[in-house]
Amino acid sequence: MITENKQELLEKVKILNLEGNYNEVINILTDSVLEAFSSYELYAEVTESMSKSNKKNYQIYAIKSLEISKNVKANFHLGCYFIEKENFEKAKKTFEEGLEIDPKNPLSYHGLGNYFVRKIDLESAKDCYKKALNLDPNFSNSYIGLAVVYQLDNDFQKSEELYLK
Image (cartoon, rainbow, N blue to C red; front, side, top):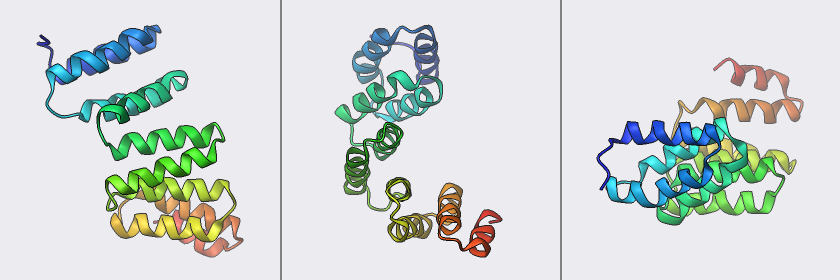
């Protein structure tokens, strides 16, 4: 039985990851966390943390997160990983699955916007970033994404306005 609290377990996973003990991280994620916590928030936190510190195992953590819990944040990170690896169709599918989980979460629309930018479909990218901003007007990353789209579309005045928001 696990007696560690959530923060201690998260710190332990971060240290193991930095040391390269990836199998131990996965064991903790699949066994201990399920016993210790009633929610699966830790998976999203670990996925996000690992994306910043270790790209090599980023996909593993995101997939583990998705295996046990439908989680928009994990879908978003996994979709971003697929974009980074230029596996665009998997990225699109992953972001769309996020929309099925929670159509009111701006992360999935933002991810789709990123996907469409990479596919040079600027109108679809604009639509997705605008949908994300309609859901969360404070989601600054979507303002930046939208500004990039307007810049690519040679509308520099609109791009500048968005960058300044």
